Length: 122
Image (tube, rainbow, N blue to C red; front, side, top):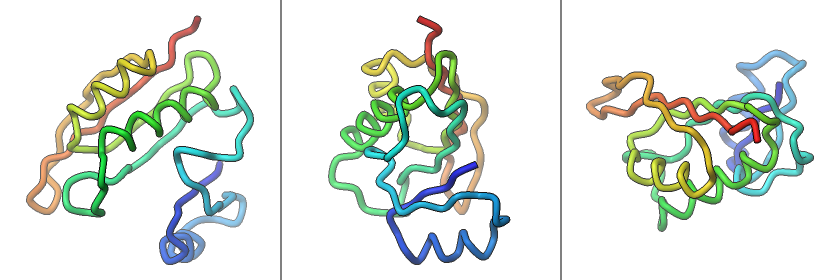
């Protein structure tokens, strides 16, 4: 199990809340140091809503899913929490990932959804 974030503050919080066997890395989710086809599952909470200001949300989601597609094994899966459904749909299509909305939540006045993305077996 590996965790990553760009924020050193968030990494410190993660270190306090995660067991020692979890590797914690200061990585950009769009450019990891992981090998091709080396990951079975990804769980992510990319920026969305009012959390963090992002200049180009569509580019972020596309770049993230491009990297995820590179590192995922065949039939690898991604679970993603976001309210940026349009950006996610576009990025999933561009990266040949199957997209399914699992459920919508109510979270601090926002309504993000949990999505399951799956890499094809080709």
